[in-house]
Length: 341
Ligand SMILES: Nc1ncnc2c1ncn2[C@@H]1O[C@H](COP(=O)(O)OP(=O)(O)OP(=O)(O)O)[C@@H](O)[C@H]1O
Image 1 (tube, rainbow, N blue to C red):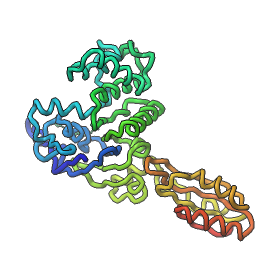
Image 2: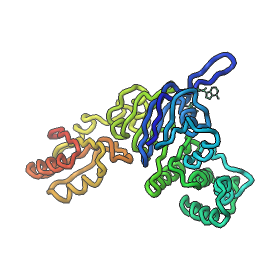
Image 3: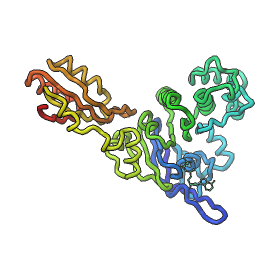
Image 4: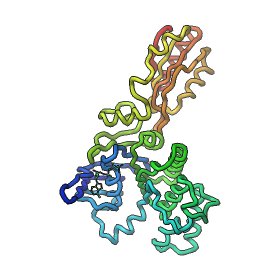
């Protein structure tokens, strides 16, 4: 468990003091992917750098399992940092070193013997999907490949925690998705805790189990991703949810479909944390003598299941339609029947 207690950072400049992180409290469970989202200037970068003390806190505490990171001496901190890997938006690779030498670097610093180092580097290269590129220099790699080197290097000393500072912000959407999938695989395979900061809700939706929303240095809302998506409370959170779900006025309404459908009924299915969505439809179509026609869907898959709405036209005998609706309700999908079209 990572516990952050009343953590603050005040920067002193010539003529002002800026509170970047303001008495922040947070608890992050071992093995989860925890996202922190906020607009530019909310204090995200400062916050994540306080966790491993790349930035020294002005006050407050960071505890990882039984170790109070904020109370460690510089020497103790150097050892402790081996348990906290970090990746960066601009990769921070050593440009004069090859892929293999970049990944090997933290192992050299930790005093790992050469043979063991080489074996570990080979393992990491396979893990992040860089086989065949071992001897390339960073300048010869794509952005996605550079971040794979960054990830391998961060994992070299088998950390318990991986901090990701806007790790996909410099990448195109396709490469972003590939790197996010790699982070999910690593989280599952190695069971390590991942804390990431981002300004993109897509990143939160795709890989996080829980999320905290930051504004003016503090956490203003937090929870399971599906809960926050379904019931955003703060206006800043609502804006972030709109990034992936669209604005409420742009979303389909019941009226959109009622006029166009001449037979059967229109169902509005609301998925909250239910993993199957398309699967529900095909299962119902097979099990009952009904036909189902998807009219519109705005369903997003999160790590904690699906969230969103699906409009479906259902046709067939009345009695079969009733059975099908009862079945859908019994598998915990919210159903509203919009009556005869
Ligand atoms: N070294 C510094 N000296 C003075 N002020 C700083 C320093 N670093 C950050 N700040 C200020 O602290 C506040 C939070 O900045 P921070 O970079 O943590 O926010 P952010 O949410 O990560 O934004 P961005 O995504 O734009 O980096 C901002 O007002 C910023 O100007």
